[in-house]
Amino acid sequence: MHWSLLPIRIVSALLLAGTLLPAALARDESSPVRIPVLVPFASPEGLDRLARAAGRSDFAPLSNQFEAQVTIAFCGPTSAAIVLNALDPQGMGAPRDRSRLIPADGLYLPKDLELTVRRHTQESVIATGKKTRAQVFGEPSMINGKVLRDGGYQLRQLDDLLQAHKIRTRLVIADEQKAEAEIRKDLIDNLNRAGDFVIVNYHRGAVGQTGGGHISPLGAYDAASDSVLILDVNPSHHPWVWMPLATLIQGMRTRDAVENRGYILVQSQ
Image 1 (cartoon, rainbow, N blue to C red):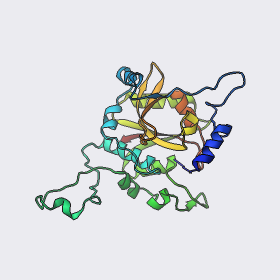
Image 2 (cartoon, helix red, strand yellow; image 1 turned 90 degrees about the vertical axis):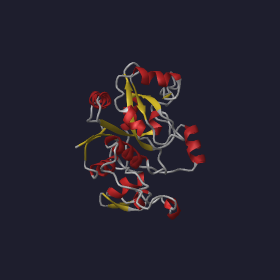
Image 3 (tube, rainbow, N blue to C red; image 1 turned 45 degrees about the horizontal axis):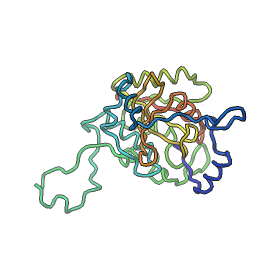
Image 4 (cartoon, rainbow, N blue to C red; image 1 turned 45 degrees about the vertical axis):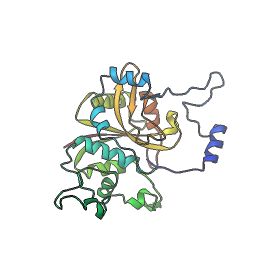
C-alpha cells in the first residue's frame, strides 16, 4: 500500500466532480453508471457463496488467525501477521510479545508462569523487515536515488518483509505484460489448494470502494459468481466482501509509487 490522505471535503468534491471516479464507475453518455457488485460476506448471498465455494481451503486457517489493522498504515503488516500465523498456528517460529504486560499482571500468579503466547503481531513483523516503523508512518527515506515519503507498504516491500520470516513467496506485478488468464489461474489455484495463501494489493477507488491503496489476504473463490472473498483487514470501514475477480484484477492493475500493484503467493519453506 502507498497511502496519502486528502481532507474529506476535498475528496467529496472530487468524487462529485467525477475526478476520482474509476473506469468501472465512470458514466458513459449512452449507458447508466456501472458499479461493481460487491456482496457483503455477512449477507445471505455472501454466506451462500462460501457454503458452495470449492475454493475455500484458505478460509478456515486465515479466519482463525484474523485480526484487524490497528493503524491506517498497517494493512500490509496485518496481512503478513495473519498469513504467518496461519502457516504456523502453534507459533513455533513466532516471538513472545511482552510489551503489553504491566507488573501487576503477574502479581497473584506463580512466578514461573509464562503469561504470553507465541504469535506474530503487526508490530513484530515490522521489526523483522527492512522498513522501519518511522518509515511506515512517512519518515522520508531513499527510494530509487531520491528522498521520498513512502508511508505504508508497497507490494515489493511487503514481499521483502515476508521473506525475512523464512517463508517462500512469489511476487506478481499486475502490469500490462501479465495476462489476465495467468492472474486468474494463480489466484484460483491457490484458493483451491491448502497450505498456501495469497495476499493482494489493489486500489480501492478502482474497485468501487472509497480510499486508496490497500492490502489484504483472499479467503475463497466462488466459481458460480466468479468472485473472491476479500478478508479485509480494515473491517470497521470495509467489512469482508465478495468481489468479482475481474474487478479485483482491475484494482491490481493500478500504479503505486514505482510500479503496478499485484499479489504475493505465500507458502512455508
